Image (cartoon, rainbow, N blue to C red; front, side):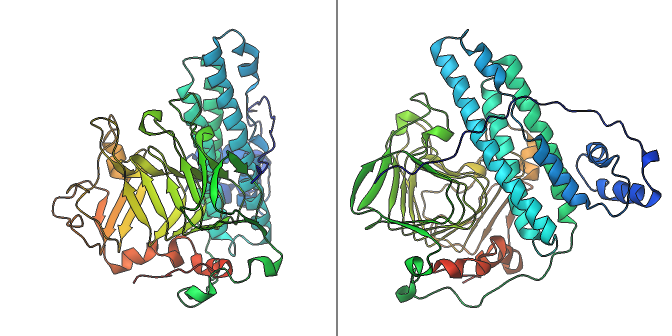
Length: 461
């Protein structure tokens, strides 16, 4: 199978943050009151007011203006990296260029989400609220990922990396404000379909017939490939999760950036994979090594194998559904900010390096503030310690207070909760709360999964 061509490099260099020169005097009273009211609910109210200064009349579409502002400022100050890289030793220059390339890709992905959000706002903010929230949250994830990469490289490129980090902070603040305003919009009625999905005999019945998807059949074999595609509507069909395997071995330990370690990266929406395996064979000594990176909205992986060691599956962003998949790893082997549901999947622990211990969910450490993970209606064996969850070394109490970890109706020798952590953000939840994390509610799956043909359970069992 040949490579699928991925994203186009986006060179957007330089930026300037102009100070707001308008004042409230330029606005009518109704608009001033509306701006003050809307911005009062945001995380960064001063920036929100600055963004809206000078527009001056009450009919302005505030959510549209806020998102458009993010779009207009999504520019990456990477020129200094190229300018000074020749002064560094070869390994350091290589690492800096990896940051630049990764951030280029992330900003391209962010622009896509922002453009979609603007179009949805123009059509109807109420009708498209859930989509807009998803897309802006994805843009925020891409901004933060770029910042994380830049922070790691600050010691080599102090000035230019600080510029990138500061720029991502500014974009993140704008995006947070837009999300806060959109969160207050009353949503329209949800689209739903009935039932538990299709029967076994009906799985994927109309891929080729509809003519709307690009279908790739990959016959049995081991393919040593590195694939990145941003094409929408791709369907990948193999001969079995262990018969058709796409294998790579790039790793952070081998000198690659985290994003560039992925054997298979999909950033196009509507991706479907069935009966195929994705593998990173770098081994435990390779440190972080991604087998599959998914930033595809409305993506489905059905009867797939995803195998690696540390950081196996990067469910980076957007709405994802995994059904009957086998996922192998050692440390943090499922991570990312996606709204992802795993149904009838096996999470399989491999032996870590030396005296290390296994951690399934990176967000379950927790890695950052506002981490969220729910384990429900699952079978947990005694490989899981009684406390269930573990702190990330060096993080303060604010992380433990802001997280949301929950368990509901699990079975097995590791499911007992009497010894679980006593953190403010850990919860043993009931049926009403658990319903929020079902396919129907968490990823709005009943509105899009039926068209993929995959079997799914929309609610609690």
